Length: 490
Image 1: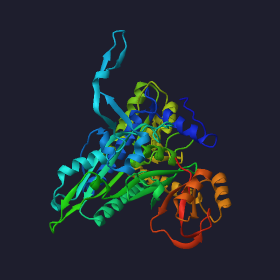
Image 2: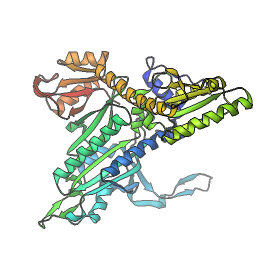
Image 3: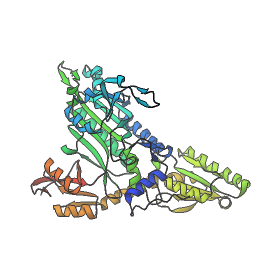
Image 4: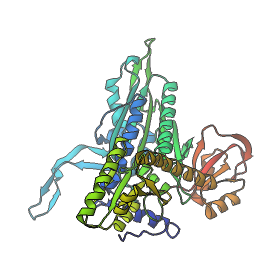
């Protein structure tokens, strides 16, 4: 199987692009900046969806769906929100095409919309306009709604999964009677995202709050989880926003409290997207191909028979299918690949490239010994195991792989986390080592912007429960009360 990919050390960006395409995860489309998510990639996204959807429902949320199109006037109602998204909006102006009589399909100029429609970049405006009709009293609160949808943000420089003009995501939009309830919800959902990243994706994250410069447009506070990729760049893996009463005021959403007084509703929104696929790929994969944590692997175990002739295949298949049934009884997803169109070596390379966590090879000689060869994708180690009680051994092995991937990622993050006390030291660390850098900052947007302009590093977050320590800002020399987390990022 000739599916070599560029080595990470040689060109990390090309390695990533090669891997996405050659592991059959996604492809470029005929529409500039948009991607086709192929079945192998979509199967992983579905596993992510299923896990997250359960976590949302376990915390009291329900799913709904809101329109793809948003009237342009809605965006003018919340000033900072429209400022944040104006440059990324796709606009629908007409609703019909026609034949110009010369064999060309053109826009029918007589079919101009009275008001232009925006293809949703996010749904706060259309949802809060809807909530106005849903909320009259404290009895109608809280509203805990999530939607799985696609959004469009007109990106000029795109990369599969990480940054595309259209992407898939979920967006939660909740309404509350008090600020305290809304903040609690915002923090709760941040914890859900962190739990998912660490326990499902095997990606360690740092929870924090964004600076004013990096805050979601229209939010009072934006909380985030930040992950570190193998090349030392950060990736924002999820955000949860406390919106205060900004959108309720913009759309006049009031409720009668228990004492009868009218007040504006308090809001949150929160989301993760197919960008998580990029985080998964870049966190664990290697020069041999994709590495998927077992909890998110569509196929956790593949069994490959090694045989000569139809009689040999029949003997091996009998035992292989018994193993498959026992593994499936444990809730393990298994594929038995008895295709006769490819040799075993080709299949091994294919499943290595596609990141299947465990591969079992079984041949006629193995039948005589009562054993199989088991290869694990994370370390590429192989061992011979007895067929007896194999299902329990594989179950433990899958958990071991899941734990090991997290441990490797955590160790790498610790090794790539630094402290800088001067601007010169900060720049040297960025250029020579990359990774997370804890450094003092004076708290001003001006300083933050200057550092970003000069180094391309941003404040990823102010970590929650941050250690307070007196110091001086690396850039301005002004007093600082804590270190914040800097990195270059995707």
